[in-house]
Amino acid sequence: MDLNTLYRAVIMDHYKNPKNKGLKKTDPYHLVHLTNPSCGDDMRVEVWIKDGIVQDVRQEGKGCSICLSSASVMSELLKGKTKEEAEHLIQQFYKMVKGEEVEDEVELGEAIAYAGVRDFPARIKCATLAWKCVEKAMDEEKDHE
Image 1 (cartoon, one colour):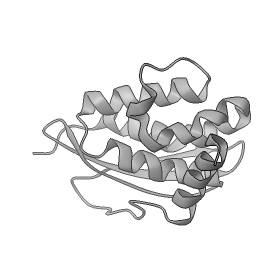
Image 2: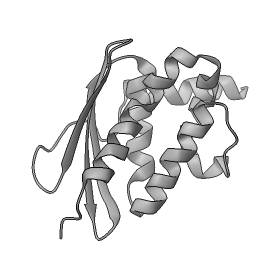
Image 3: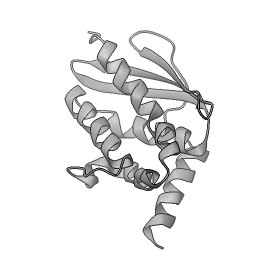
Image 4: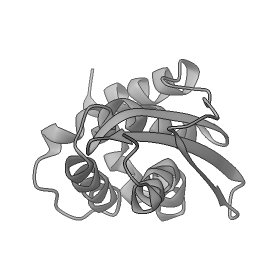
């Protein structure tokens, strides 16, 4: 099995069996809603940060397989990370999908499956929408004690 086939399998698995799907709609979660008007993706992400640690990430949306599967992968990757680690991973993901060099691909885990998005510039917004929700939530979020 070549890498592209493996990456497609990861993307389709997270699309068909999304992790952390469904919103809690309560404190201490911080909700951010963003859309991608160019293709119709619509994403809502909730983030719970306590004591500087990402406790949970929930996601729910409508859109293409790239958008929805990326949200699932992201929600798994960021849980348990410090806010700083999560911010670093988000920036590394952005670099990767734009075709820029990343510091350590291994730290991106299954998110590495989206490396091929760099060859389809119109899909970069699809892959990054949920990540932008988390980034915005962390910018707005105040730790809940």
